[in-house]
Length: 343
Ligand code: TRP
Image (cartoon, rainbow, N blue to C red):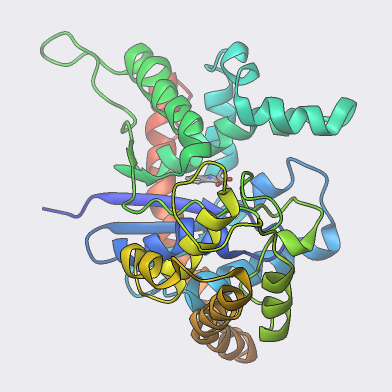
């Protein structure tokens, strides 16, 4: 039996932060033994909001390098860049033509981002979830690791595959039911679903788009900067760190970070810090963070110093990704009735 397949991706917009690592990439690493894993850098998604062309290529490369530095192993995973596999754009178009507009207009993330951008909203931003559906469906992914904020997008991918492609275009099988053209993916809910919150507001998610850089720790922040950001992180007047007090989101978030980054786990961290003041806790958290990131940063530096190392991985990944994606695209093209001219 072949292993179930997993696909996921992160946008190459600015440096990856603790939220990306603890909430996503760290879990990908563990999936590599039990799953056939595909990880892409979703650069086509990165241009759905205004972007800087002078940075796109470098951000794409550094994001891929960080995947590797975090433990994604090219011998076990297919690591590639979304825009280098043209089937993503092509399938997105085919799916566009069968996806009702109102399915997209009601997407929460679209509405939130659109509000921020006023009348500058692009078609691409509205279409973002269809491109994401193409990413997933091209690889016949069995499972997609998703956080809370991406569940609605995965649900859309499932609906498109099931209701809009399979039900309508699947050739009738012996029992009269349509056969599947696209695999309908399941969400993969991860244990200890680490949701990392902002350092400056414990009730909003750590985000690349927060204009305040002090709100996040990026994976490449040097030790002094990490220490400084943690020193300035928002606190409250109460003594002692604790989990789950709705009045104290900062305590919950920072204690949660300490539990993971120190490797102690939640119970031990909670009892260790139960009577600790913030002034004693923060240096501990800073040290745990610096130490946890040290091997990632070292590996990243090595990779970037070796000219062509990351490109070689991405070239290999593109080959395999392209094969799988191309076969799926062919199936959809045929099901939709496009002319096929044998080579
Ligand atoms: N929308 C995802 C995010 O912001 C990124 C993404 C694009 C993705 N395509 C994907 C995630 C396919 C999983 C699978 O996190």
